[in-house]
Length: 179
Length: 311
Picture 1 (spheres, one colour):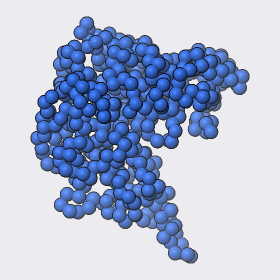
Picture 2 (tube, each protein chain N blue to C red):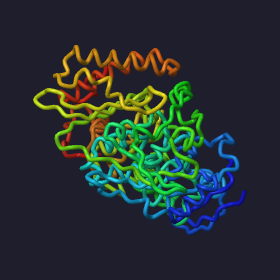
Picture 3 (cartoon, rainbow over the protein chains, first blue to last red):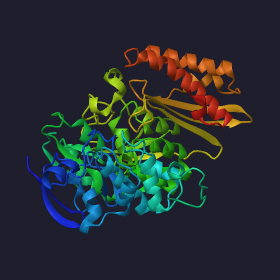
């Protein structure tokens, strides 16, 4: 059983890889390239923990044959903060406490990045649809939605709820505020 | 996963040549990546990938409907203005397949070729009267979707029809009426008429993105509150994807009142009892499916959403 040569760009770096014909993208990322930010949860394309960008679109790395990616570009969560500066989404996740155990976070970030790259001003419904394939057992999603909405500059139910929680007694709501 | 090799082809002829030599054809490969995990299901097989065959990425208007190439992803289908205008029911069904991430890789042809009885796109294709364009060693032929699938009772017995536990790693000749060396080149779908109504509903355990417990596709014509024509198909219930037009016949020519809906429910319950007694979760499905069908018809006729009807 021979390997397959695959030329692909990973986080901006052009690579020539010899991959096993059986390998999934997540196997190559984690085992061959040491990019362990991408997590494997269910392994059947349901939990979204392994979400990466392939040519800018969100895909489950557990469902992608690595050998099929010749000539394609892959971005992992490590690729969001090249040079040490956090992506605005990463900063917003920290600011909104959109993290608890953190296992789903890389996948959520990549789904959110794909959404905002394609649609910089999504509605709340579009945000929720974009992360529907990302399971999170900790946050209840509201802080995640608020973080994404914050970066997009749109108002959502989740953002309003955060504002209500942080407002001091007697303080009047600013209807135009986002975060 | 253990396979004999991976072949990237750029022409349909190369794919046909590989298929004739026994290679297994994949497009997105999403189902194969799951089924091949932790098993030797594909040991010694060569996977031939259609993903880089240019002509198979086309989604075009065809004979008043659409033709969807074998490498067209479900996201491309959902985002296609041509498809949204001509076959909104199919687009609606495709939106229910997995998550955005899955739809960005999985293909319509793959959803058909995998032939899961609970697949979301198949009931929609059934009621729309779709067909598949098949290519093989003896040339090209068109197969109506209603005649494409084989009876596979084994599918009924495994829990939830989940991909992970699928008994058929290569469904091409076991679950489809394809000859060795044949592959699906495209899916052809007639357009919905402007005066037709449609409905798709997927019943899931958790409102998550996995396979549905069952699903329902309806397309029909209602004039002045009277049902003039109605086609129905349900997934997750039968050993072979099929139309259940016979079950909805009692309401055709009527206003789909409670007696007619009850008759439809009773006919479906009888059909499930006769054809699918070995169905996993039989006791649940034989009670819920008839109610879902009746609620679906009621929603179609009254132009409401099924979300309100199902409790």
